[in-house]
Amino acid sequence: MEAIILGLITGLAFGWVLQRGRVCFNSAFRDLYLMKDNFLFKAITLAMAIELIVFPLMAQFGWIRMNPKPFNLLGQIIGGLIFGMGMVLAGGCASGTTYRVGEGNTTSWVAALTYALTATAVKHGGLNWFLKWVSPFTVKITPTTSANLYDKKIGPTLATLFHVNHWIIALIFSGLLLWYVFGTKTSKRPDAKMGWKAIGLWLVPIAAFAFWSSYITGRHYGLGITGGWVSITQAYTQGHLINWEGAEVLGIIIAAFISALISKEFKFRVPKRGIVYLQTAIGGAFLGLGASLAFGCNIGNYFTGIPQLGIGSIVAGICFILGNWFMTWIIYGRS
Image (cartoon, rainbow, N blue to C red):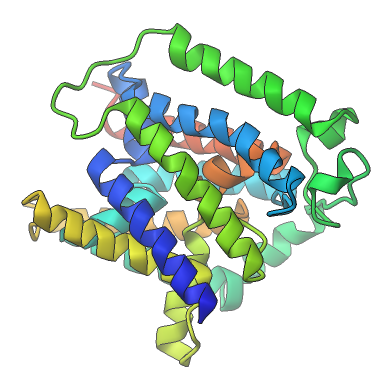
């Protein structure tokens, strides 16, 4: 019960920021490609830059132990590209699709359904052969460098790859990201309800609380969404109690619903063309398959994996962007 309560609290806070800030990685990547608009991209990058310092600091105090995703070059490249394309087809990433469920967006309902069902089938059902296919390429190591910061068996990081102290790489990486964030011009969005700095800064304590609360309840990871949808699916189909991540997803939807009601943005949105439902259904399936192969969605990799310097999350994150840009070019960019 403690895990459910803490996960729900995390989701309520996260969902509020997602809805008020319109935080969607699909929009962030697509806008950067189509319109050179870096507003959301900078918000995401700011949060990552600060988390690069916050996470090892929490580990240094013994509040968590970092546990980067396993490295699987085949799975994270293929899964990352599939997930990136799925974002465009679904009209939202894992977080964007989830919070828009609470706003009454019916296409997001369809995308979330196929996302949840596909991820469940890949992890526990008839599509599990996908994971079995890539599993021989999975790499986990026993850390020797900065071992006091990590769990006993982790995915390789930039620090373990170069055999240097974690703090050295984290400070350099964070500095480079902060240079980009504050040293380059930012797109203006005068109608935005939250500024990009506010979005980025709000996300950091939520990510930190998520990591701590998840860790003490036995999950040993931070923010994520795909596993939450799998947990909800299994709770419905098999009567299982939802886990921390399932409660987090429910919290996101509830908070987005309340926030949308307060701001008068809640509305049952129905597309003019029914074919859009088919597109979003395919996109949701891509999200579920891609996230499963890449060991996590955009949230699990960008807001938890990359700030731990996980090589697998970095590879997946790059492929999320490339897949998104490729599908954006297919649909929008060839005029």
